[in-house]
Image (cartoon, rainbow, N blue to C red; front, side, top):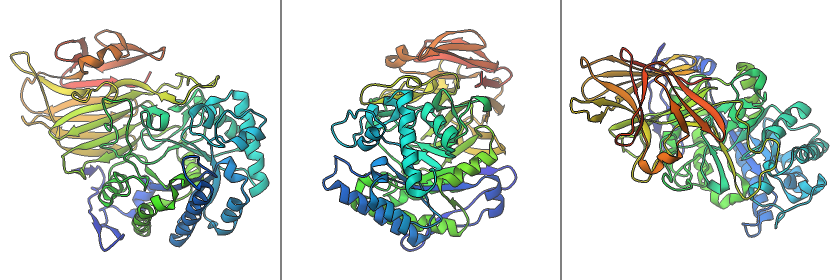
Amino acid sequence: MIKKTMNALKFSLLFVGVGVFFLLMPRYTIAQMQQTSPRIINIVNFIRQTDYRVQHADSLLFDATEKQVALMKHYKFPGTFLLQYDALINPKYQQLLKEKLGSDSEIGAWWEITQPHVEAAGIAWRGRHRWVSTANIAFTTGYTPQEREKLVDVYMVKFKEIFGTYPKSVASWFIDAHSLAYMHEKYGIVASANCKDQVGTDGYTLWGGYWNQTYYPSRKNAYMPAQNKESQIPVPIFRMLGSDPIYQYDKGVGTTGQGVISLEPVYRDGWMDRRWTTFFLDAIVNRPSLAFNYAQAGQENSFTWKEMRAGLEMQFPLLDSLRRAKRIRIETLAQSGTWFKSQFATTPATAVTAVEDYRDQGNKSVWYNSRYYRANLFWESDAFRFRDIHLFDEDLASDYLAQPGTGGQFFYYTIPVVDGFFWSTKEERAGLRIVQTNQRGERLELNLANPEIIEKSRDVLEVCGTDHQDNVFVITLKEGSIDVVRKSGKTNLKWSLALYVPAARQSELPFDSSTAKQIRGRFKGHAFQLKLQRGTLRQDKVGGVVFNIEPSRDKITLITKK
């Protein structure tokens, strides 16, 4: 059950015919939703000139972009087309976008580095092909800060020469903080985007970040949300691709890599699947989200039109019906970035709520983000746990801030307090669980069945659930803290929060020491602490427990900011 404090939001998703998507109206008005918590869709298509992995790449990639432009025009969708440097200097792409792209769409920069780009900046090319996917060659993390500025300058000069202005949006799987700040300060970009969270996929690991939505990055680390206006780069970063809020996190758990369940129309587990699409749009459009909700659609042209066509032609009528019903705003990345900056001086609190399981396994997931942390509440059939809590610290600098990275991968992390992916095995799942200790000293997990999610304010999300003994628990996610409270139920219930981690993973934990009111740790050489305002922390190594937090008068409060 989902509930809004002012007015309940209840409606159904219905398909009528092929590709027609209708929404029953909520009890509050569309105008109120758009003003208080808009649902924003960006359609971002980025353009490579060539791809050594694709036969006849130059012609097939151009054909894909040409078909994408035509489909966008057919639906009168504003979109964002981002040009890699090799495509930017190709007259065919220049002509296509100038003549065929609608005036409400945007042309920007896709920040993968190619041989023509590097050589135009006077830098030696290190790749075997004109474009390679190797992280230290294809991304600015592999170049010195001075080289990064040269790459920015030569691109911006060429873009303005061709299109008469500098791009407002620059996106990539990842852009380093030095480049991003330089682009903003010298050329005035207003929006950026980077890859969704993933482990090992394509050699990129980004883990623990602001989940799915949008944040202002730290000047020391473009993956890390800043906590203060003075420490942030004033360019909002939108997370790309749109992860499955229930199943993406655990895909590949116990291994060194993840698969993909996302909005990309070429993946059968994601937006090529109509049932998944219904589920995902329900989570984005209809469920509690606090400040706003966001999804990014579109596809890179390297997949070719043959692979993406069916997915896009299924998706676009659904987006069109939502837009016509004024349930979503479809806009360019630059428009979304400008809106974000007009609304938020610092990174806001947002949520993604998925309480209907399209696989019919009874699983549910609630993601909460603020500038201080992210948390994931996860119901796996009849069990409940905090699957993830990562802290954000603007002072934790990226490994690539001042020096280039080497090798075929890059790694970006935030600070793990609960990590259900890296700390789990295939057989056992790590997590922070609500437990009862019985008279024999045994711990029994308590499930929060039938969760009710309530938006208490612009930045506070409340989750209420009842266990099998009719104990009512309320978890309140605030910008800088997490409350767990037992509101009613069995008298003298001995309950606590217990962090379970499989024995095989406990040597990897970042914790150093603890007291009754805090646990201290060190991650990548950076000291951190998790403090307790209410409750008492005890070390406990029994049955896979790392530490146990006992309530004070049935309440535990974790402080998630420094």
